Length: 132
Image (cartoon, rainbow, N blue to C red; front, side, top):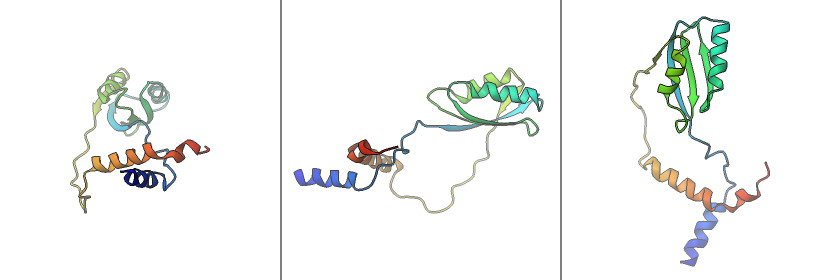
């Protein structure tokens, strides 16, 4: 039993920890815009969107009538963003066409891999001595 624990700790501490592996989850959303004029109106909408809690980044193209944004799904939803944008013009949710996944796929479920990586990160003592 002790040898299994020692082997587990050795495996967890073999490599330096990846401290960037566990940021807050972020999702991507897109909206089609109508009625937003290029220039000052688009710049004001862009600035207002960046001040909303939960929106981490956004790109607005008034000429293409498109808005792309990244958001934290625990804080805000795309429907809430659409409601906020609808005040400046008409906003419709953009639904990308589904494309089939092509190529080989891993036979191990993603949840197992994530659980192993989280276990390795939790047991890695080297993360306490990293100088940033």
